[in-house]
Image 1 (cartoon, rainbow, N blue to C red):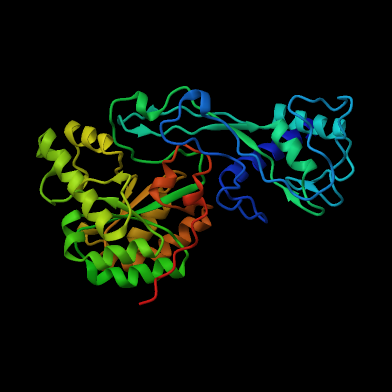
Image 2: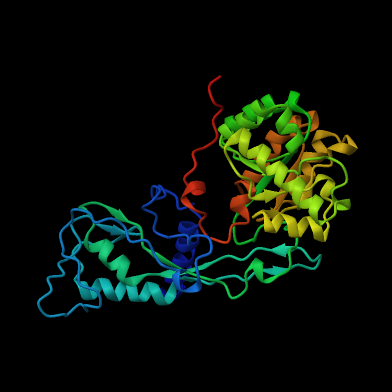
Length: 384
């Protein structure tokens, strides 16, 4: 493999790993110091892709004024401090010209293209993903201001995709973008609280965050369990309020039902759901429109555990692990069958190289979800 091809391969691996928060040996930046800034909701195109510049360190080297080139007269650019590395690459002692040349090469050869939202063959929505490119100036300044021995993370600028999910009429999402080497466990809850305690213990022991889709009526009945789920670090989503046939609701009824479920979950957990999973997978144009108007994505599933068929746990394990792919959403309910098979399913997915993350992160448009999600600690059962 030629030098340029090798750089491309290594660069592509690095940028994908970094933006997905999976780069081994490097802890993701703490909230507020991330190297990729997520645009705030409703931000216009002109504000998207604005990078977040890291704080100044105490290393040698003065920060050049904006637009100053490596040979700008009267500006002491200095060199990176001793032991400074940039994305694992030693840059100690590089002149400003050499550092800019390195960054220019990375900018040209390492780029994550944005991926547009689209409809699959079933008419389901495949979410968009922002692209990213190296922000040369911000990375240059970060390297020069780094403390001795610091390994600086490059700064990336987000690139919006040409087509987003909001360019389509409301449609369900059955799976996340396969760009992510990840999958999600979606657990619909309207009953089965006798199995929730051991289920939460299992997820805590395996350090897995799942998405619990909670019925509003169930939350009103056992709010302490809803609080415990949220307190353990899991995502809480709406499963509607009533458990009748949701597809038969009219426009006003659909909005009332979903809003009522959101209020119940917010009151019990302090969190407003951004994901809606309907009972029995029943959807209608009215429900889809109501969910979007209330700020929720309507989500179905990729692979169903089919608990209602009372399958043998070995069959659940084999089928779910076999059919799971990057972006898959695996549906469970709090049943004995789920409890007896889930740990083996988690192990099988991990052997396939799939991280398990909440649905909200799986379908996020950002290559690396926002700090409030990517920095969340592994789930831990709250003290009783």
